[in-house]
Image 1 (tube, rainbow, N blue to C red):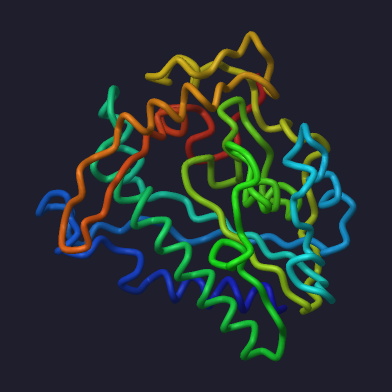
Image 2 (image 1 turned 90 degrees about the vertical axis):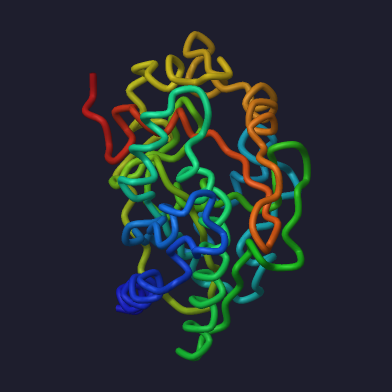
Length: 274
């Protein structure tokens, strides 16, 4: 199957330098060579799956969200991948209770660069297989439509592609947990859809409240319900305050938090129902 070939190619690519912190960029000497992600998890959905049209509902994403056929006329499939953070990234952020660990900051910034590189690589892989493909993250048409709403959502694409459901912290809980990052491609290749093992967008969240207790910004309130329980403005202000000065030859600015993704029952898997 093509999806299996794509997953194998992605795993091989992520064994390369892109998935490791370069010595010149390391915030500390001992972080040189740190691996950022474990092996990726893949899912797929039909480009005409009715769930994509739901993204244009204001309460879901945004009325101007782009659908698969907007990105690629003739699109047949959407491929989503989840890259789980390594134990090193997760455990150090778990141990540092107030501020993001240096390891987590690398995972947030260099990790996003790795996702961009992987997406471009897989786009080329599909094109070599004779298919057209678009990677929205690096596409010139990708843009923010409103605060916290862009014209394509990786988490919503992952939900539709069968990878998991949303949690109180607004992350997506997959079989490999919530601590990691997503990417997706749209292609005219015909790829069988991954069965969705859930019926509702919040099915895997047990509302245990662990993410609320661990949030240093107090941006999560379970009393407001799973759909409305996170205040993005409060969260965003805390993340902005965590910004480090430019570092290294590339003068990269690093920021992050991720406390709601570690030390919680959904950190590295689907939590057991309460």
